[in-house]
Image 1: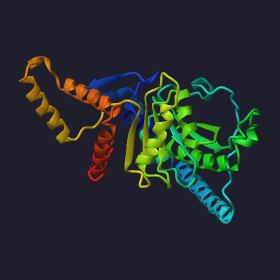
Image 2: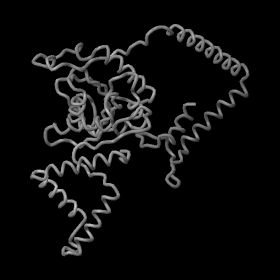
Image 3: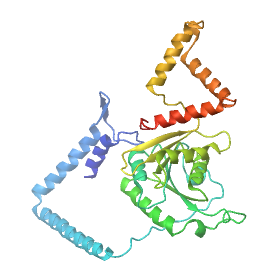
Image 4: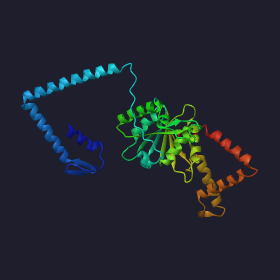
Length: 334
């Protein structure tokens, strides 16, 4: 069975390996592990020979297996009954306080995914990340922000008991359970903060994360939550890192993405048509082939910036509010 498992893994996880059984051939991009296949066939042949030729050993082995199966089943049933009515045992965590937060302090490579958790009963977003992330290539860091007041974060540092409380133990116990079921490794982290969004953004910047993943806030819409995170990204010192925000909705299937900071805008088809029409009209008035679509957008943006800082600023704001009001009715999914 072990040989068969290794043979199956060759096809389930066809990645590079440090050691391989010899005699491997490639046919149209598919690896044929002849050596491993021969070993598996020989072992199964030996097992079949033993079953057919050694009656006493076969009967004894089957009886032994059935007996142990019954014992394990009865033990499992007994232990399940004992656990009924008792609170789930919490995981024991070893705390490793760090004064400076870096990739080395949490063993996370740059480009990691930072997953913010808070409610142990709402970890759908973590489940999605565990399912879709190959931890051999990208690390997963699970972050819980321990809320403190401004006064509590003053001149005296917080000790471990003030940062890692029963709430963190509960949520991280659920995180460990999900990670073990998925067979993935995650890094656990707790940071103190007076604002959870600010703490998450600052932590992501220090860890050189590529993406922040959150569940949907019960008090905010996805757009409001994205705007809140975006405001704290703007407060980061220069040079600000490239970050994206993924908000996973309750059904775990729908997500909303936000690119934090400068990024190419998504234009409506009618906007693209307008740019093209302006390009055709202006090209015929002199610039010709030297004029590009980006020149049209650049001029429009500079003129809008000039009018916004002139006595026409009221009209510009009114036009923007009108555009936002109309756009909310047909906004495409992110």
